[in-house]
Image (cartoon, rainbow, N blue to C red; front, side, top):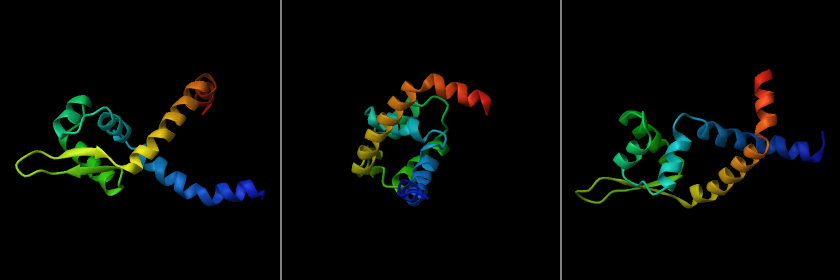
Length: 115
């Protein structure tokens, strides 16, 4: 096994962990909504047509548990959700991944048709 393959083998569990979280239904949509400036629960829910309150609550808690968002509560007001520094660092990777996907869209589409 080459040195590069050993390095990837060591990193694979971390990549899988991130992809497992991001591939869950609604997670990326919630991240995008918060990044777009929707910080209140109802604003996020309105932005994501079709998401239930329970699903949004569950996913917000999961993002908070993974330190990607921070929930701020003010007495007598609704909670607000903000991107943490961890999410901000992940945003760069999401943009790069999106760019890579766009550049390889035709090849990826033909590969997925064969699966």
